[in-house]
Length: 318
Image (cartoon, rainbow, N blue to C red; front, side, top):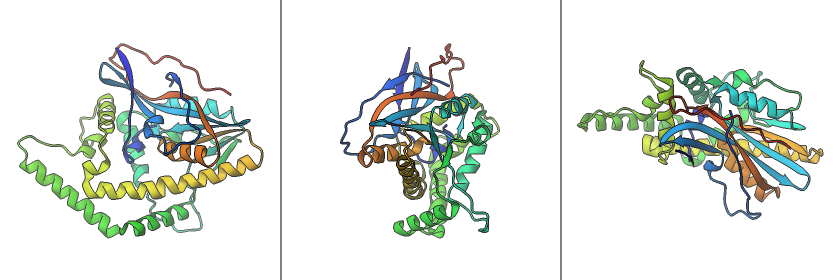
């Protein structure tokens, strides 16, 4: 028996995500009242209650003669996902590319994305997956649509000020939650592992397939990050949403508007799936686009041992 269930993912564990699965048509109301759920952009396929594939969406939006595809990706995935994306790029006049641009003239600084970069590399190694940065090569139709490291750092600082946070309060909050977790484990009759430690596979006995499925199960639990990391997780949720997601979404949309003014009719937005709900909302409410069909691509193929092989479903076309 095979079924498909979509899921809401935790902001930090989206870094672990990133070839083909069934196309699914979806019609959007012309006057939406709120952002689309994350489950419209990332999902999990199951076979007999066992996760068999992590999938990402390519929804299409139209406004008159203009077509915009949001090519949602994850930064750690099977290499076949990036091959599918590379083939798809040729379909567009321009592809708006995600990627915080460094400022060479400014001394190196710590970015709020640094922790994610380390997570990508560790995840790729332990889950036997590929890094997006190793497979996606710049093409002639790529247009950078992201912020600079200076802009991101400033946005992060603004978000911390708005939340009343400093580096010191975040560090203290993290230390407190770790101490609470230690006390809970000591008081428990049964050993309780650290959820993030288990997710990242810090122990030597890491089995890639099991780690993938365990990661997906944690993601599909529906619990917010604060349930795992308390006040520290809640603070990170807010900071990442404001600076890493919302602020950068606006930059991408500004770039899209410029391309539309220049008369582009076929545009791809190649960004992480975590940015999908925000961009979807702006496309539909501010720019007058209507969401059309959606194609799902396999990011993690976990069918091993389940007696099925991923079928070669087609890519979206114009």
